[in-house]
Image (cartoon, rainbow, N blue to C red; front, side, top):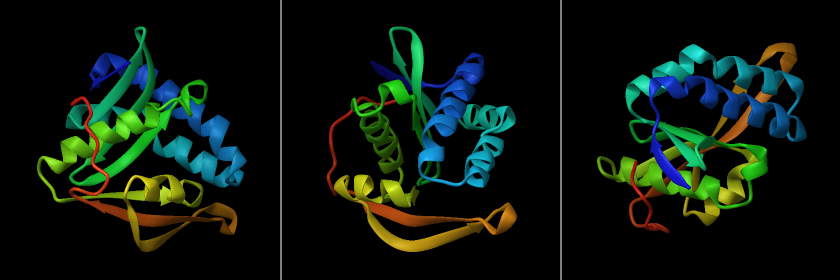
Length: 161
């Protein structure tokens, strides 16, 4: 597997990774309104903006895009891996690459973690520094942890984008 910079002709495959993952995994943890919110958020235009920023990458296995990650400044804005590739180290590989890129210019990496993912990020050296609530339709609230990792905490070598 290889993590490489995303380019414009990958937008449809990235859309597929995002929406397949959201529609398969999120309903296990969230109400429908949250799943719908994330599907709307990860529109084709949003993906094209991420690619244009130069801060989006894809994880490729045998020529197929199986995961994606993106950052803005020192903030990891998303890591998604197709369900069939989860629990195989793919998310960790993407995180390693994103953290390495961010640490070239910043001493701290920030991300917004779902409550189900907090322990995963804690194992990577992240600490909760705040709590967020985003109000959705039908009085549904998306609750998340704002987490950060300082340079040198659980750093691991990884391939660069």
